[in-house]
Image (tube, rainbow, N blue to C red; front, side, top):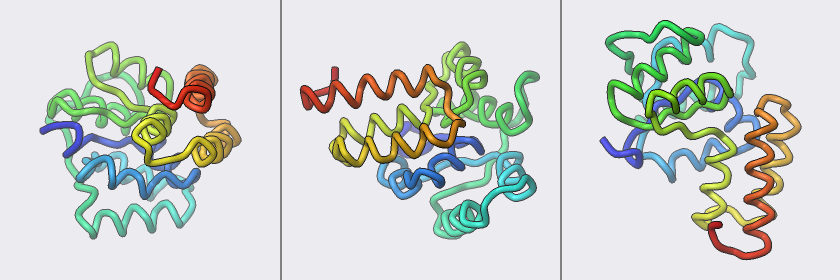
Length: 169
């Protein structure tokens, strides 16, 4: 499988994409996303906005999300994050993770990891989003307080560079 066809998504990545309006862009980037059952449980059994659950259900019924569990779980991280990292490692696909610790852990295992800020910048440099649209989504993301300041700083630098040069640095 290539990363265009499939990646595996975590609760935090899904939630942030829904909050800041990036969820529709998932489907122009990936054909479908794998979701461990533990992530699905987190989305429906923790307090989440109904809109996130509704978008999840719609994407599941449309065949854009596929529930799949790893054969084995790594022993660190939270349940959902363990399942995402384990499945990404087993399937040799990218992990869509936004929390700093799991992001670093997965990267240390050699897994391609994409956070919401990286996804946002990817959309900017692909020409999917304009600089002003990217700034809007970035500001919404910053206001959530849920993204690592290091990730936000990295994204802010890229938005500024793109605004000045118009090319990938």
